[in-house]
Length: 413
Image (cartoon, rainbow, N blue to C red; front, side, top):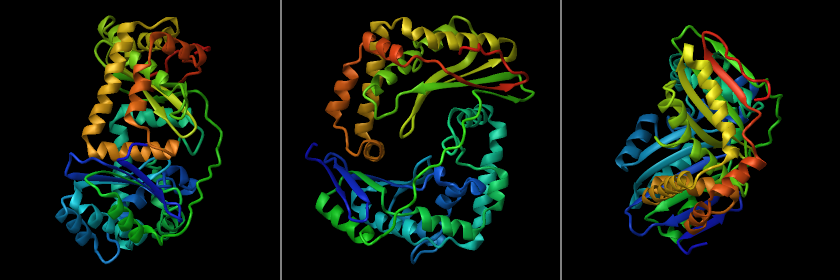
């Protein structure tokens, strides 16, 4: 591991990982807690999302207003969010303000007020977000796709449902905080203008006596069928599909990324060229890769006017299947440039780098040096991508649509 990357796991299970970037004056942190939406009890789906909003509405000696003012006075650009596995707290500001900011966040995650009178306003925002899906057909369709692509709780939407959100009480929230906001498995990743010894001492003082472990075991429910349709009277049919891929931890990870990069990622990509440009079937078409801890999927999306939707789906499936037939060197060269560019941008942003440190540690238990990443990207070849597609063909699709009528999906797709 390079000399400017450090890590330490405290006796309570919290891991601190940091990278010193001497050419910047800023410092960013990403704090992840094993309190993601996968831990939501079935009758209280959405509770992790509510909790992540409530913990910043007063903590330790600070009221909600005083806490926001204190962070603003530090010049901290910040956010809170909930993913499938983790609750995430992010911040970036001057390096000199890092430890004062972490002192506040130690209170946020360990000693939040969780005031009774703040639950209804937070719930109202969550319900508004949930209802907003009906005005955003692509996002609404992706929620449905995930529900069919993964077994519960992996396929659950972090927003919950109107029924579960309405039933959550402040006692439920407090109990969920006590059960899930725990140090074992938590990761604090820092990148930027930091001194390791001072950071280690400061974090040890703020978090070292924190105790407890969240129960992160998951009990999987059945996976719904592989076909779904949402009937809506709209002028454009939304199409989304997924198929299995290898996860981030697999040696074939970059070959999987290469395959997706050939399909999507620019005006010369296959999906854009074949479906949008040559056929004029849709304005938007794309593919992407999504990884979980032990599984991953390739996702594809297109939106097409209703009378062209069936043709759009047919060609989408065709192009995904054709990857096994061959990939050109020009396509791989474009993918390599795109992947390397994303890594360069990551090096230039302390916030992106902190996120990457946290992600690497969560998935791999280590931080990948840039040299390792670059070597894996540059090693991509047409033969490697085709070989990957032979071993892991894009098939067994989950297909979800939203529009006036369902589309025909081949039985062997």
